[in-house]
Image 1: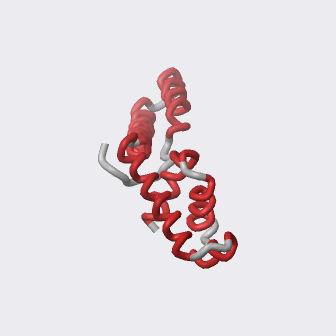
Image 2: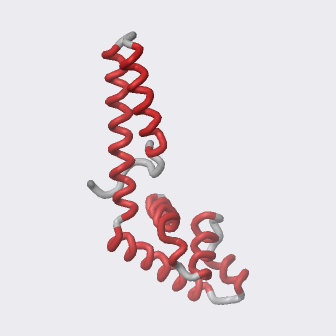
Length: 126
């Protein structure tokens, strides 16, 4: 499951850089849950050809992540934004009924929310 999630995230980031065939095979295999045999039959090719295309596409996604680090950076931002939101919750409790402070907290929360945990937990360390 971890690999499926990682490939899906990498595909979201770098998928447009793959060939159309690599994109289609990865989409069918990981998103539509097609088997190698089903993909092979749909494209009238061998299962080995499907397997090779998938593995080459996955290797390219990993290579681009190693060089560019967009997934790792996104996960770091996500963790940071989640931490900011938790701190805002604690601060909100402390300021009590101070309307001006509560208004500022809500404004900050509105700025942070778009970045809140869109990629989930885990991943490499920041």
